[in-house]
Image (cartoon, rainbow, N blue to C red; front, side, top):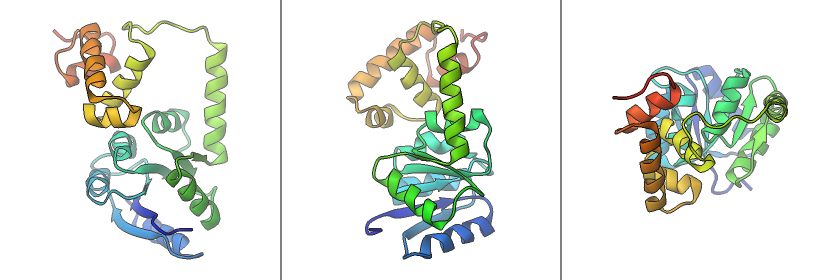
Length: 215
């Protein structure tokens, strides 16, 4: 059942990494192909090793989990493993590409393996707390009056802009959204025009800080 599934473990706590390794070997070994103690190293190893699943913590040095989840998702399915249950973090992790979200203390070896198999197979897996956060967010959004995008971006353009802000290249965005690279380039050109931006950095700045406009 575990044949062919490779795992990268990224957590700044060496004890946590050791515990996760032990949990993955309790009922038959999954192949742990690498470990990272910070977000930058996690991104490097994901790009090099191309693991099936990356277990990614949120709070890490160099680069935190949220800042690399989108880029790592271009190479590997990401399963967030963290103690953080803040709504903003859970939503951002899922928005940027995490296929699953487990909260420490809410899973054992069996559920960890189940989650890894689920995300490796293209499904999602959430701890009860993370699932509740997502449900609450969806219900609250449904109650709120829809507001037009302040920049006039379409739904697809907003998806592309979110991935640009996550650090993905046009090619990686095309892979994620199952689009032709030329289509993504057209979206990016329209986004830049609407934001009044000439570079990706300017576009991200305007997207995140609507009162600041590039000159």
